[in-house]
Image 1: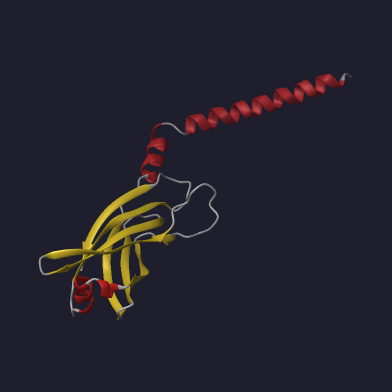
Image 2 (image 1 turned 90 degrees about the vertical axis):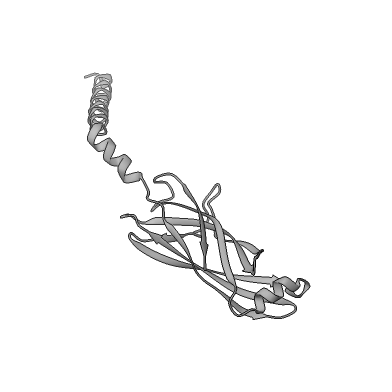
Length: 181
């Protein structure tokens, strides 16, 4: 027998199997299942609250503070919070002063080489903390009076970047938030 016949038969069988797979998967992704996939990839925005701002130490050379954010995930699936950028403001009387800006976490760029993100399990929350070091606060008398006062008012605004439980599922979401304490 001619070996070319076996090769042609194997190619025909392979093409037939691939055709059957293509037809069954293209029909499965229509109407009901397609809409459930879209619903599954929609993300309810997470909520961000200013949990606490504490002044650890104040000297003429440096002021050390800690800030805590509470992130709540109302989704039935886990969410990854990649980065939280914030600006911290303090109010003294009728004046508002910008104290500092900072960020917690890191957004992936190019090749993802590390896991500097935070996983929020379904219907759960996580507290993110950051340490703030202000150099030479003694150069600003207004800032020193705020830091040495017993109960300043704090306000924070910023952005949090998050997506579903995988870096590749769903789209990246951005939420602008404002909170006060």
